[in-house]
Image 1: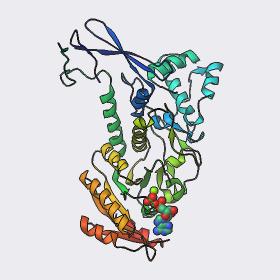
Image 2: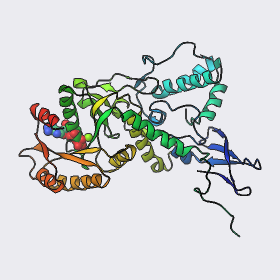
Image 3: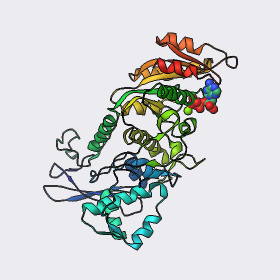
Image 4: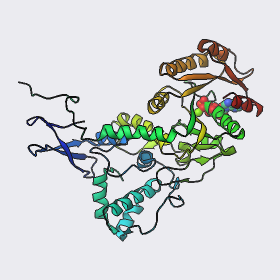
Length: 150
Length: 260
Ligand SMILES: Nc1ncnc2c1ncn2[C@@H]1O[C@H](COP(=O)(O)OP(=O)(O)O)[C@@H](O)[C@H]1O
Ligand SMILES: [Mg+2]
């Protein structure tokens, strides 16, 4: 999909994405000529349809995790279906620390997807030079990465 | 006075939503993963209960015993059976940096199946808004198939068998995801009902450009009457690759494996 500023006859560029948490996805696009910003708001089922395709409106900033769509969407998955710890590529050295509140929040995530969610937040923190993951960091990362429901 | 709105094609700058680029990247990922796979064979019949999964598992084991590297992708997401048929146990799947390692089943067959991921007895269900679920459920199942192809570290395989569910839709998704349509191994039981269902499925697959390898007649014997395998083989100009009785001796699979 493309967004056209009809007045300027210019394609608008992706500006930012927000996930307020009620199933809405907001993606803002800006006209490079006149600076007008327009937001696309999807309802929960449209949001779900987009994420079912394994895509993020506005583009991905980090590569997808393996089986990300399955892990992020399946209900009733076995809590121990995945083993993140014994993979040889896992770099566990000097990862960011997790605040008590962030750990508490992570523990609420179903076991089926928890390891992946943890990895995504850790990679986000690393990319942004964040030493400690807090709930606020998780919120920002979730919106920036377009991770509805994680 | 209508607004002067140009078409999608008229706008030559890249799509700022990023969606086409991401869909393209998904295709590339499938192709890159399957670059090391000699041949993808879809096991298909269009009909349920004729023994696709049974044939897939035993054939895979015989191929593996013969010294070839073989994988089974259980594309029956709603009725997964591969883990049980291949005695894959209940070990967790190890997650590597960019892929999940497949489980290892009997005779070293590599596999991935929803029954490795779901809690025992739980149906495949997805989180998401309850209203209008039909709109996105199909997309999620297709995404699961795509991820089973692209995100599993299949490694170098001589043969990847894709065990399809009944119906045609998963075959269509598979053909869409692959660079070229898969070869098709058809399983039928002797009856006219099976013959008619398989005929439609095989015709649909060929219309999508798939190459039919041949027909496996399953459940041969006194229980089911009919000549579905011969009729289909003749109509499609392919061989009957195996006739599999109930509880067949292992040699049946060795012979079938040698013909693939
Ligand atoms: N040749 C056979 N001998 C004994 N049991 C068989 C044979 N073929 C299939 N079965 C059994 O019949 C049932 C249906 O087979 P299945 O492979 O699940 O069918 P499909 O995958 O086509 O739906 C299963 O319980 C399977 O073990
Ligand atoms: Mg089956």
